[in-house]
View 1: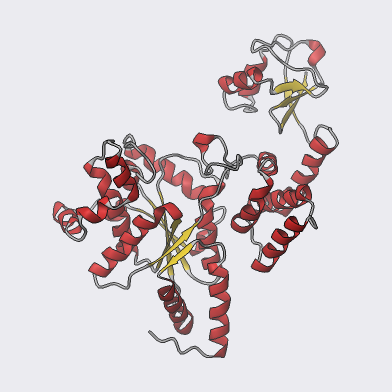
View 2 (view 1 turned 45 degrees about the horizontal axis):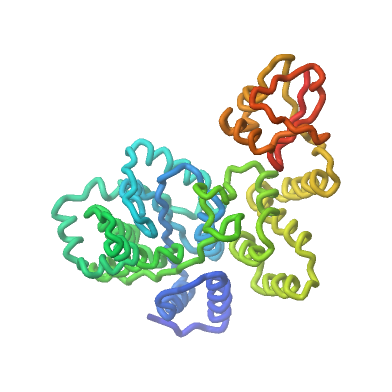
Length: 411
């Protein structure tokens, strides 16, 4: 491979290597990455950057976007993103870190979830520089002979060395045969899309390296594994997950996004700046040093972070507006100026009104908030009954739901 770079090519290589290595936990093998990056620059041939998603649900949160943001960095440098929707692997369910098999999902639900996933991912990844593919494009054509061939190119011992599989067996839990095919299918994906680099979380190392094995078996240049950290959720102790209730969703309201970022522990700010903003390496070091020396105020630094993240998805103007709104509500104890209004009449059931207006997801969600004392009028009067009915004395008053939702009752 030609690594004899001229002066301008060497400068560009150094720039790309520094930027693409920032925030990465591991590049395996690192020397191979340097070689393929140099070759790409020397011969003006973009690298193909793979990232796979399993649409087992419909919602994407900021934790999912750590690899996506790295893909966007590659794209901004002229490389090609390849996003694979795992409509086959989703039916198995990624066994990584799980002590039981996932229930199978119907194909129609997987397809619907996959389309929704792509819509959210393209808020960060450049759609015009992305090849989006469903596994069914190639796996629908697979024969039993293909499957037997793939099975013959790995070993049971290797598959059972997967930490999750090993732990499941040692703990006496069930390990189904079809689950062993998950890393095989992920590896075969890399063959079909001719990946040069595959992005994944730290917990995906085994699966990503399978791609190298299957590419080697076909005489292809094996891909490089680029692994990224697992982002902790707003609680600060567990990985970001909808099931843990500690996530910030891509489709969250911008004010909710701002407020959720403000709720993270201070010690998470460095990671959130690193993985969720466009900050440079030098500026990141300044923020980390400033927080450590108390030269930077944590609350103001966190507001800057929240504004950056909201701006990423909704634009700079909305980012600034959400900061102003947050300061009005929490610093000055005021209701936001642009508060929404909802028409009501005497005798209306409050929870039905809030659910119909989509202020709460469902009546059950609203009932839970009332029971948690999280619904009140702005003057401090708590709403404690789930059977609360609206009276004329409640008109033109503002209700606060949770920490960041407000609604004014009007006739």
